[in-house]
Every structure is written in C-alpha cells, then in structure tokens.
Length: 161
Image (cartoon, rainbow, N blue to C red):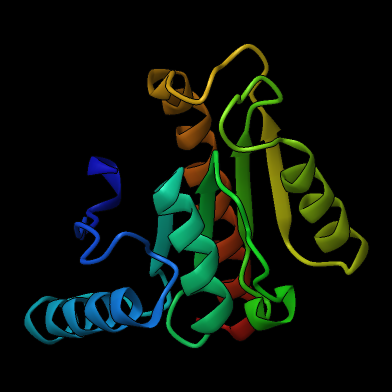
C-alpha cells in the first residue's frame, strides 16, 4: 500500500470478536480520531481483514456503508450479516477451497448472490492454501487492491470528481 499513500489503521480486537457492538464502537472511535488528525480521502476508506478480522470486515461493511467505500474479506465468514447493508460498496473476497477452518462454500455463494444482484464484487479462489498459509494471500491481496482502486476511479468518473 506504500504506493497508495495510505494511512493504515490496524487495531487489535478489544473483545473476543470483531463482530459485536463493543468492538464496533471501539473501531469507530479510533477511526474518527484518525480522521480528525490526518488528511484522509473519505471516498477511499477500505475495511479489510483476514479470518476473524475478515469476519469483522463483513460486520463493519454491512453496518457502515456510509463510512467505508470498499471491503476486502479474506478467509472469512460473513456470518448472518445482511448484504443489503453494503449499499453499493465494492467487495472483494479471497478464500481457499482448501481452508480447513472457514468453509469455502458460503464465500462462493455470497459472491454469486452479490453478482446476481449486480453488486460490484470479485472473488479469488485461492486453491491449495490452508487457512494458516497467510503468505499465500499477499499476491491476491495486491490484485484486490488494484481492483478496488479501479472501482473507486470508475465511481469518481461517474460523479465527475
């Protein structure tokens, strides 16, 4: 992300899960503090995470489409979060069918459902990677970032920015 000139905020989970109100409020308070003290392009605020962090990605993205403008979920369960809460936020999913911790099927189903709705979504099927082979996610994450930049640029063209 160096080339993006990004400000990266990587909080540690304050509870045993990212997908609850306590964690949600802690993250939002932290992000609001960052916004107050740094020059942030509010049209390019990405939420991303791996495994439990990916679960938090779904949780935050489906509840705060007014704040986040893109989501990348890796090796993550969507849980029961309503996809309606995403608004028009582009979503990129990276998951392995060989993940022994988080089942692959629901990620593929979510991708198909979003695509059927005409939602901006992309998925990388990362064959051969177990859940704990995080290094295998580096190249797909780069591809996800490039795709996300394309989505943001296309939206900027639409609104004449």
